[in-house]
Amino acid sequence: MKRLKNIVVFTIILSLVGLYSVCGMEDTNIIVDDLEIYRLNDTIINYISEQVKESYSEYYNIPQISGKINNLTFKDNMIRAEINISFTKVLLAKSASELPYIQGLEKQAGEITNNVEKEYAEKYIKSRKKDINENYIGVKQNENANFIICIPLIDKSCNFSDSKMQFMGEFETLDMKEFSPSSRSQLTSNGEKDIIQLAKMSKQKALYSKARSTNPSSADDYDRIEARKYARKYAKNYNSSYSKYSSDCANFVSQCIHAGGIQQYNNNDSENDWYKDSMVWIRTGYYSDKYGITDYMVDQGFFFEDTNKYNAFAGSIISWTTFSHVGLVDQNDTVTMTYCAHTNDRLSQSFKNMSNVKFYIPEWDSYSGEWTR
View 1 (tube, one colour):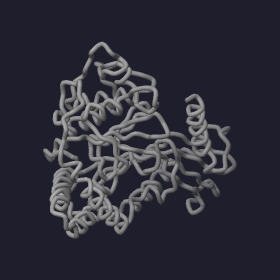
View 2: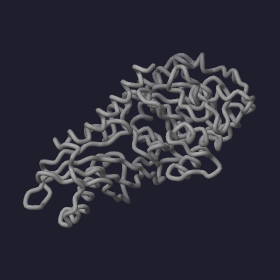
View 3: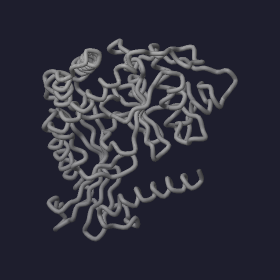
View 4: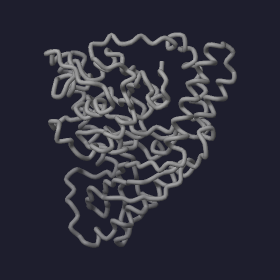
């Protein structure tokens, strides 16, 4: 376990070093104090905003966009800037059936010959379309994304043609092409593959056995929309009814799930019970020898583990498997996903990278009123 922790710490250090290696600059850069450089802020923000709009143009209209430079350094005629871009997006699709992932689901479902599998597939698609049509189509979604850009200066002007820009994920930086949604053909293909797998699991999913549960709640008590409301309300704030921890991610997700209707349970066992400030409440479940929130939610029959982000609707838990970190998915329209989290406070933060991530999905979809497996 000690060796694993050392690897994780080393990986984090490499990620931070990578922020500087993008520009070929060392971390000894000084904060800019030249007013002429500061006047370039709007130019930089406008440039990155245009890159974001272009990346999303195939699927979204972006009626509002703004930016903030969090860190700006200058050395050897090179600007290095870390920027947060906040924007509102609206799907161009007029119905869920126009989205390529849903089209893939529907196309392949039409090829299923087994009656049980076909019925399950059609039921699943109906549920997803209801969610998307009512929560995403024509609805403004907010998103936040962080970027790093390195720009050469020529005569005190930004030379964007030779700049280098990257998307900053939760633990790593990614090329800008990773920020753009997948192509229509790829999303359609993903849908085709997913419905085949889901349909094959229909026999196992057809029966729901109520909890190996000690918690007085049942899976259908969880309202994922209420959990999302709480996540958005307190992503950048702290509910004074709860303690605040230096590593606050599991504490935050526990609060969200409790706000969604799952009762706390205290049987005087802080190692296995889930209640405010207990070990299970504030741990992620990342370490194999330490019981945490993800372990508890699965063992109680409230959530199940999955690696497919397309199944992770709002109210699901997102967990980074290389790090001890969790958040709550707050949007997933099959094209893009966002999440809320604490420690590094995130509100509707862009999620792009599927590696080293898994999801915990509610057994009950409170929105469609259906069991999810």
